[in-house]
Length: 75
Image (cartoon, rainbow, N blue to C red):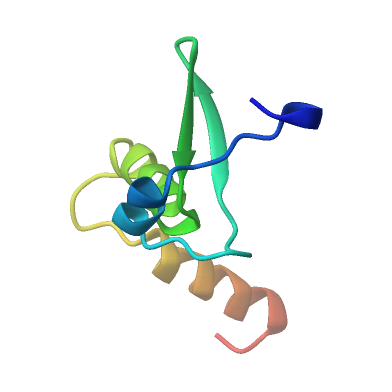
């Protein structure tokens, strides 16, 4: 660990994740481990978590769009 708590990610890890200088990353502390994720990986994890609680065939996106249409009077 460097000055100010900076961590250098080895090139082989950056390549494996497809990271380039200036890319955003997400850090997660899980069970005393620090995990580095790409934003896409973080979104996939969140979607998988929500999917566990949504019944098969139900579309939360479609429900939200319908709700917004009703609110704006376009239903």
